[in-house]
Length: 86
Image (cartoon, rainbow, N blue to C red; front, side):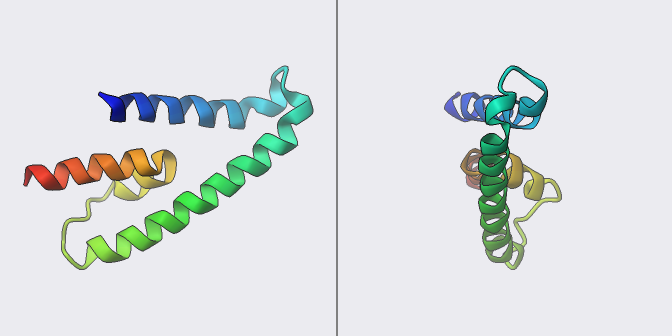
């Protein structure tokens, strides 16, 4: 339940960041885009580290990269739930 709420919140955050230049928040768009780029870099670094450790064990699925990039720790929690069910 909380994972889905977190994922929905991340979708809203990404939509706000991406649409900021065309909305009423255009004055702070550079700040939001810079923060969004920083979060994206952190999520990519997280994905690369986790992918390397999971890929060797054979528990890495095709869509896991995108799940980690867009949702960060909430995507990781989804992957963890899938592994605990096995």
